[in-house]
Length: 116
Image (cartoon, rainbow, N blue to C red; front, side, top):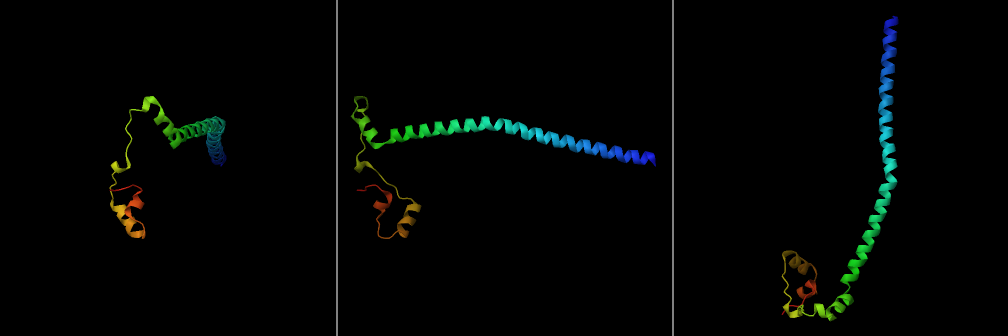
């Protein structure tokens, strides 16, 4: 009976040791992630700041007054200006359905362009 009791105790100790090793391994993984978290957070903050700066730059460049100022410069004087009459609008199936749904508006108003 001593051998059976000793075997049971040995099995319990081995299973407890395996569970403890698994718990420590999981805990080490969580600790590594917690160590990396401030670095990742700092990188995210920097990326968001760069994104804000780039967004401001794009909005500044796309600003109509800035584009009109560019037209006045001599290096852009050779660019052609598109006339409103040269704009061609193509109605798609979706726009025809919108036209049916919205009453009181012409297709010109829905497309936002002038047609001749």
